[in-house]
Length: 169
Image 1 (cartoon, rainbow, N blue to C red):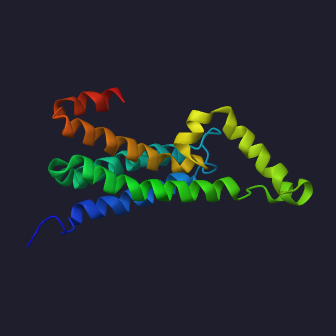
Image 2 (cartoon, rainbow, N blue to C red; image 1 turned 180 degrees about the horizontal axis):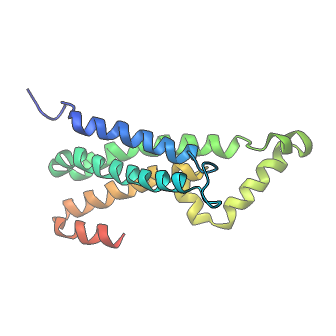
Image 3 (tube, helix red, strand yellow; image 1 turned 30 degrees about the horizontal axis):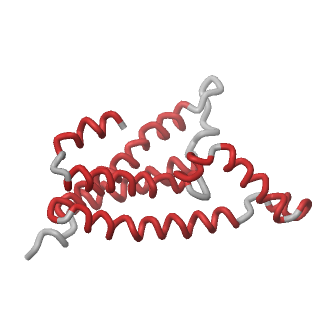
């Protein structure tokens, strides 16, 4: 039986814990209470303890993708990058078009509400490009860039630069 398609229970458990950590970060668990001397110590602790999740997902992706990248770096990277880019583009368009402030839409109209957001994005075009239509999408272009860099270094037989480049980035 091939080990490439088998699930590794410890990694799957790590994924579940990391998913819960990301949900915890985004739901801002305990940021308003309980307070001790006007500071949400528990919320701050939980927020910081949950910050392992995104690096874990990057490491897990690299661990699972590396065998394929070793055999065919450019082909694997392109087949991996294409669906990520499509997902990023689709959700960017959705977030660029979807109004968030319904009160402004009702009082000033759709174009006025979206124009404020589009103007905000135009202030930092490079950052907006990397984030897409909403800041939460940054993970996808970061993963595309990471997989692209790794595949180029493997193709050029420069794997020895992966760790130094990772530390620099």
